[in-house]
Length: 259
Length: 315
Ligand SMILES: Nc1ncnc2c1ncn2[C@@H]1O[C@H](COP(=O)(O)OP(=O)(O)OP(=O)(O)O)[C@@H](O)[C@H]1O
Ligand SMILES: [Mg+2]
View 1 (cartoon, each protein chain N blue to C red):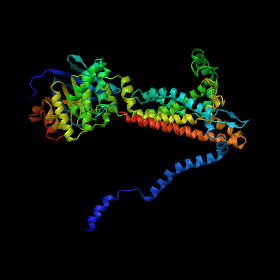
View 2: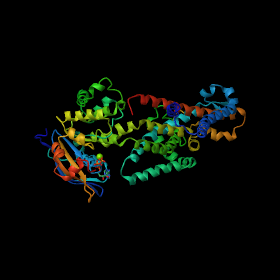
View 3: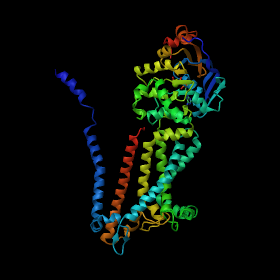
View 4: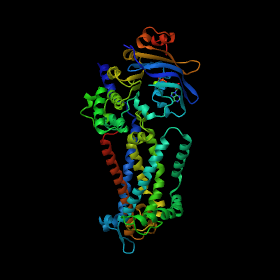
């Protein structure tokens, strides 16, 4: 399934610091375009930190700083000053569903309205985004109800629709299913596979079965016991990583002898 | 069999607090309304001479004359409501802006100083506010706000007339400063309580700091901000000493907010000690009842507003 794919994000010697503490060291790998890349590893190894470099979310944390480069279509994400452009191209779905305190429709229209897109376009986008997020059938007759009236799984799909509405190229997901029940989780997984036709998806997950089920490529990270910073141990097509890991540490982790 | 019955019965007895604790709670929870009823009862008794003499006319009349023994509440209701409303109009934007800054992560130094400064405002006694207002605020306001406005916009109702140092407007400004600490401290906590994920998701969509604050954070905190406002308003309506010192103490409905007026709380405090005769005293006590009524009305209106606000798609 992975097959040949272009590179969407080129991560090169990326290091990350929270103030003086190093959280990532020399992470280098290429995230392929229109594929699902999973990032796995034990708690605290820097998965979230890595993900938040890709849309510069870490700018919100005082004292946080990245070193190295992350090229997206040739432009460096780490040094760009066009944050709004970047975040339009790189959307993010968080662990806990975070519907805005407004109607379902307004949630989806939020991003497009920020970008000043015209009304007809926004209206079309509300529908097409909800359809793409496999939520349209469930909410088409209640678009004006508050988004908080949806179930957790629906809220998470709404957040995905909200993300899709600004036509991103990359979607980052940080444990998007960890607050959901198994049925809702499967729905989101199906959705991810659907979306990977058009979008580059990077997902952080604690659930190795999930990584094995949905992703095309997997990155395994681990905290360096001496430096206490996160490192990339192995990056490979998912099937290879799970069936024939090259690094003994990867094998230890996926066979459950670890972390 | 007996065991089976036991097993069925046991879950039915939901764990309850001990009886003694429950009766204590019952006593305490009844004490508050009982005290209120008692107070209102006593006030009514004291106000009786005035209540029987003026009837409902007390609410619509605007004469306050100790010589002819004619008393009515409208000028004071007007003064109370108008000063509090103007105070809120000034304090609300400033208070919320301050709260937004205080709730912001990072830049501890500046925010710490600002936060402490604002909290210190709450520690200043009313009387001291009154003195400051009389000597500093009132002359400044007259020169830099009241005179320019009456000069340029005098034709607009309630903005004309001959401006005075002691006026409804000056009183409203003092009130605004006095309610600012409550407003910003409570609002800050409410804004801090907005889930971090909500802010981050907004930023992640490419929103600026302004858009995030204005379109997501504040709407998410709306109900709590409303609570803070009502709390502050309650304080403004009941404030006595500082207002009495700068409002000019004239029992009439002025044609301009830059003219002297009077509030319910201020007139009671000023005149009660010297009130002679049953009717005069009764009238002052009745003003106390009116103050309770005004405060209750404002609270109920606020409650209704919150209800209708949360009925809309929100939070
Ligand atoms: N805002 C922050 N300030 C300081 N240190 C942080 C911050 N966020 C994370 N860290 C540190 O960076 C390291 C990596 O954290 P990160 O959240 O990226 O781990 P993670 O792999 O996502 O863990 P989990 O699986 O538990 O979510 C941890 O040691 C953590 O303590
Ligand atoms: Mg994490």
